[in-house]
Amino acid sequence: MTVQALRLVLGDQLSCELASLQHLDPLHDCVLLAEVAEEARHVPHHPQKIAFVLSAMRHFAQALRQRGVRVEYVTLNDPANTGSLAGELQRFVQDVRPQSIHITEAGDWRVEQALNATGLPITWHAATRCICSRGEFARWATGRKQLRLEFFYREMRRKTRLLLDANGAPEGGAWNFDADNRKPLPKNVRGPLVAHFPPDALTSEVLALVAEQFSEHYGSATNMDYPVTAHEAEQLWQHFLAFALPAFGDYQDAMAQGEPFLFHSRISAALNIGLLEVRRLCADVEAAYRAGKVPLNAAEGFIRQLIGWREYVRGIYWLKMPEYAHSNQFNNHRTLPDFYWTAKTRMNCMQQSIQQTVDYAYAHHIQRLMVTGNFALLAGIKPQAISDWYLAVYMDAFEWVELPNVIGMVMHADAGYLGSKPYCASGQYIKRMSNYCENCAYNVRESTSERACPFNALYWHFLMRHRTLLAANPRLAMVYRTLDAMPEAKQQALWQRAETWLSRLDAGETV
Ligand SMILES: Cc1cc2nc3c(=O)[nH]c(=O)nc-3n(C[C@H](O)[C@H](O)[C@H](O)COP(=O)(O)OP(=O)(O)OC[C@H]3O[C@@H](n4cnc5c(N)ncnc54)[C@H](O)[C@@H]3O)c2cc1C
Ligand code: SF4
Image (tube, rainbow, N blue to C red; front, side, top):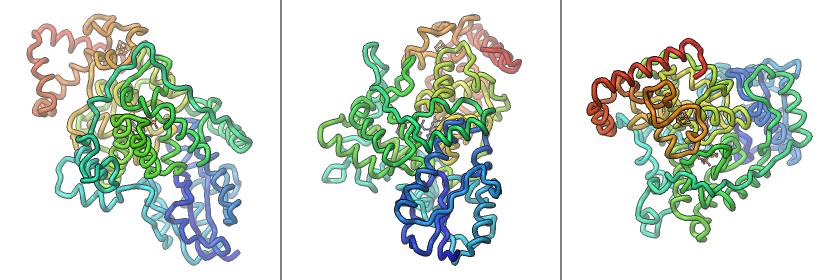
């Protein structure tokens, strides 16, 4: 067959608006999609995540074919499959000898490196799905020793003109309403019922394949209940707009037993692979606010996650890779406790957050940051070990978004490049923002007894052991003053109790 342009579409680029699919000539061009073992296995991805990506790829290929596009699709168990994206690209180039090869910038550094290493003359297209290009972010970051989300976010608000008034000032007189978004969930409030997406024939086929080939991976695919097409993703989005967005702001940081999703959108995985488009989502949220359907703290809070945090972490990732992945300012060495994989722990907050991760390949931001992340930070887990865990277990996990969240936001391993202070907290924070402590084997009000909440002593131990690096941070001045005001005996008791927890972790005991 003669092919003018070969257009490789990666598994997280499933959008007809993709830059490399523009100017596609259906008579002479060919689109290539390949399911490869290297991507499915480079960490032990949750089977629901593998099934989600493969099923979405197959549906996308089907949709392109229905529009008259010539698609070459390589399945995971195709005997000719070389097992890597680079290998498949080379194989097809040899086969069809295209006049040109087109790919949109990859999400992950590793993938782009591997494709470039083929030496093939690839025409790279900018990832226009993002609001801030790699170059634009690099220009913004130039000359800044540390970056701050808040300033970047304001630039993005000005650029997109989202939630600005006629004079270009922020709607409501402030850029950020985060202070309104920290309410715990009142006892009588429940999240909306979740929208369901039962598997169709194509997804069922993929589920069988995944069950057969990835049975050793963490979690199971049987609960898979997530959109795999742009149409389904739109249904998920509309459900969120109507039923969850109004309370998203108020309860953004809340956690509750048996409420895995609360008022969160669950759109991250669909968005990350191209089934939803970020500008459209933000426009819908702004429209809902202007129509009086949602309060400003909800609309601003949601838009900040998308054009602020999401673009910010992508910018940092591409600016700082590959060395960013090895950051470890606290010099942590501890391995990841087994209960991150099994959910077998007596700490109820950890048990709940990990169990829902096993069940749904999902946890919301505060569970990731202030429960599983906070514990890893306090316990001194090696950043690369906890990062590999996050990359494996969440349906939405792609390195460009996962890595800076873990290395920078959770582990503060980048010496404060991404954020101004570590998000370390004792059990008191979890008690304030959730009802987990009510059902826990540990007592959140105690710090040094055998029954005491492990987060408490570990929190003070973290601050004591990293005093040299952290005490000068003005945002931690108050906690160091509190620590210094404690009687020496109390400080020693906290240190000893934390040492006990850490040695139990090292011995592989259940905590
Ligand atoms: C340790 C850690 C690891 C994370 N790993 C990932 C990951 O691999 N992939 C991923 O998409 N998100 C990641 N996040 C960010 C965030 O936790 C998820 O995007 C969010 O929980 C997804 O659920 P949701 O769609 O219901 O989000 P909502 O709470 O409804 O938020 C809306 C959207 O905002 C975006 N968003 C919110 N916070 C962030 C953030 N910190 N960084 C980037 N985007 C954000 C997401 O696209 C999300 O869908 C991580 C956060 C932490 C603390
Ligand atoms: S007492 Fe401590 S370990 Fe238990 S749920 Fe509360 S914060 Fe978590």
